[in-house]
Amino acid sequence: MFTTKVTPRFGDVDGLGHINNVVLGNWFELGRNPIFRMFEPNLNLSYDTWTLIMAHTDFDFLDELFFQYDVEIRTYVIRIGTKSFTTYHEAWQEGRLCVKGSAVVVHYDFKNKVTTPIPEHIKAQLAEHLIEMPK
Image (cartoon, rainbow, N blue to C red; front, side, top):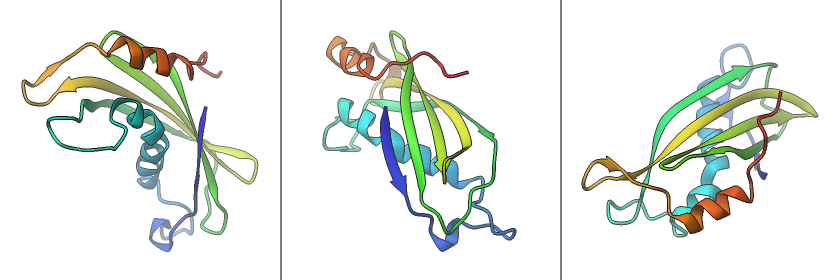
């Protein structure tokens, strides 16, 4: 598991005083940065080095998130395929699981616009963080 602490910004709050639902996609992406570094340690986003593209995301909102408390983003790997992998994310605040979701990330060659196999050494690194999907 990877954990990332997020301190909400004033601009993350909606008119009801809650963390706006559109913010979670960005926070969960922050949680994936350690995984992204397995593929590109310097996070160089050039077509020559970057090999990941998002295929799917989903979120379930379970409880409210508030501005005045930090949020812990927990990131896990729940599936490793030949050309893609799936991450699972949780947003915790004050001991409460508030949001959960997943993301499918595809290994991709941007120059040739084709999916490519995930290298075996990276699959091995991903496997170190593989868990069974929480209930």
